[in-house]
Image 1 (cartoon, rainbow, N blue to C red):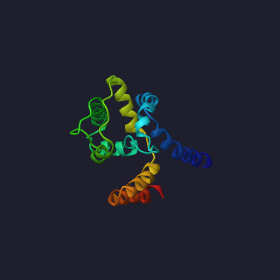
Image 2: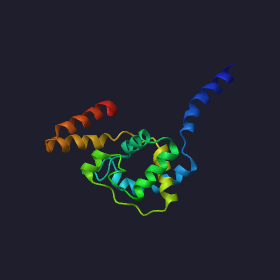
Image 3: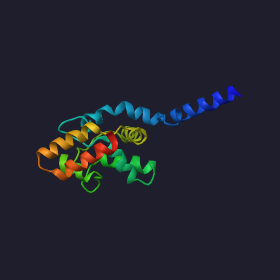
Image 4: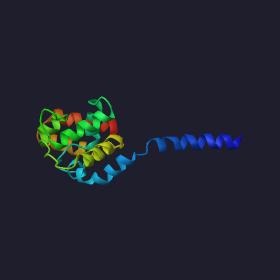
Length: 154
């Protein structure tokens, strides 16, 4: 009986770990991702691009399924336009990202990694945002970032 309870407990612990493992495609994308982090680093001040936590959420909310997520992200990164941009406010503050002339296969691996990864909330980005927005007199933006800090970082 104790062995059975131990096995049940062990499987309850290990099942979530194995179910959160990245696919082989995402693992390859993770190895390519550091080039994205150059601009999407949530600790950069001033930021060059929105943190991937928010990018991922926006794409998930605007995609029909995983395949659509990967294709939409790949299409945007290859040829960014204002019409295709899902991060309107980020584009307004930081500008439209440059097109990345990378092979589709490489972009799809990176997009798969972005889809599957669990990114932490960008608390440093929001702290920087509160500071910068307050200094610029944009109290509405400062308040939004402060609310995100309270909701996700405290």
